[in-house]
Length: 147
Image (cartoon, rainbow, N blue to C red):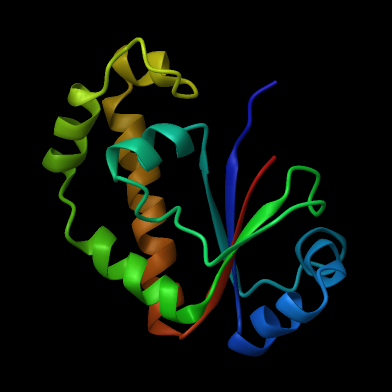
């Protein structure tokens, strides 16, 4: 079974409400999706997190016991910071970062990207960048989770 990473954006008020009542996370993410937009980076999440030194995956808070595996909440302020950080990365730098990773490291699905997976990695990177750009532009926060 593979684990994909999902990102969903929410208004500032919704993010604040989730901080006040964690049960809203399951309700608004899974049961009655109230996100404003979303994306996933499929199985590339761990490779991208390592290549990007965490940018795009840095949480304001980690919440356990929700969404099966827990989730990270990212405030609008931190969304903007991560968007700025991601905007500094080029495709060439992402690929250079991939080549610097050690194949012996315990990084989820790393072998997929070493074996002709560069284009796939860049597609997932572009989805991550687009998600943060849209969320930052609209002053939104985000929920990030693995499932």
